[in-house]
Amino acid sequence: MKAYDPDTIVMAKQNHPELVVEDARRELHLTDEQCEILRTILLYRGVNKWLYCRLKIIDLKHELKDMLKTHPLKKDEQKIVEKIYSEMQNICKTSRWIEFGKYHSNMKNNRDEIRILGHHM
Image 1 (cartoon, rainbow, N blue to C red):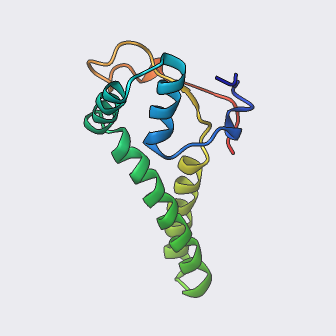
Image 2 (cartoon, rainbow, N blue to C red; image 1 turned 45 degrees about the vertical axis):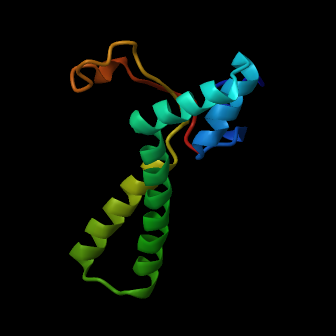
């Protein structure tokens, strides 16, 4: 597997669970049956959902940007919508190098274990 670091990770393909399956097949020499098990694990752990949600957030961000260009808003409305757009932009461009701690029983209490390294895109 190609080595990445917090600065070069942006060059890796993403946004499809089959990329994970194919990497695991190659690196761990998984059988077809094991790949199906991995696909199921990705599905029930919510990875597919969040990859889909990410795509939908990106689509929504583009719609919002277009709306801001074509529909004049009152000054206070404009500020609110621009803030939402900015937050969506920030989420979409967060670094991919995010490390979670090993403890996951209560993520609300373990947020300080999440490390974001590298640069926004």
